[in-house]
Image (cartoon, rainbow, N blue to C red):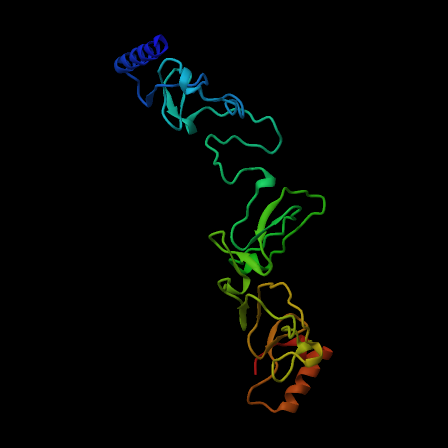
Length: 269
């Protein structure tokens, strides 16, 4: 009986105390506060091991900073993201005043988004992106062998990252402006290429040159239909839709052999 009366008396005292307490700006009354500080942290993980008190043995109520607020040196509660930055102890770390719970920076808990895969030992060129310009398309990605990168999520096979950072099928990459007699092909075939050595009247790959495997899509600007790339790297129309088949084949053979006519002047039929 005495124990019950004691508990009632304590609750009454706490309630009376809470009724007269006035908290400051960005503060709130906590009727069962912990002994953990609500001050701005001075090192990483300073308050990670803070435990809540037993509800049956609560300390006196007190004013604490509201959610996502921390107490500054002058005693006022400020947004947690406005707390002064502190130096991080480890290499390749940076201060984050309000880190998210997900995703974390723990490699063992890394989760990739849709159409992404986790690569444990990526190269600088591991993640493909849709080209945004002709200059970007022609700029080769350099991947030094001595560079070691942390695990990262990259686009899956034959997917590329668009402007919004999403991984989309490479063949769906938006087209870019190409040169004269050229068209953008997001996923060009290996055969036929646009080289004169593979020129055919039909514009299709010879049966002998066909391969039955799926290769990596490599967006590029290719010669337009019925146009082929000459040995001097200029686009020329080799086969005319209305021309004589035999003369077209002879013309292509001259280009393939590298005749003087080929290397001196480039014109269209």
